[in-house]
Length: 192
Image (cartoon, rainbow, N blue to C red):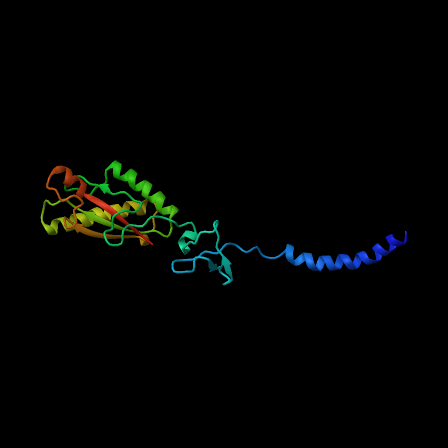
């Protein structure tokens, strides 16, 4: 009986002591893995609060857009080729969108709405037939009609720029109908 009384007298002190030790370890803000950009150390990076966090096998360094879910392929900066958006094609001497081109652009609009950081330069291209001036104007109309259709589908106009190259940058340099059909296009250069 004496030992029980002694435990009861000590236990409130013990409980307070345990609470002081245990509470800081249980509570508080959970630290999330850090994201780092290019040029940062591979082992550590910092969170938004500036605290260093070790990276490990489960933590991959990300740039700012990737951290927001904005990971996507970019077009090659020098050539403008590649990227996630396929070209659309036009009939000879036309700047109107076919039903196939409209369907492709609908898919592009969905992709762009899911990737808010993406900016697109719409390039208008023509085949080699016709004068330089005529093809520059036709390429501009092709880029403009493409841009306008994407805006109608809900893409912010500020994210879409246009440029015309006319016949100056053929995709296929051959001089036949198959090459000309490839060259009559709107091409999409994706950047951030």
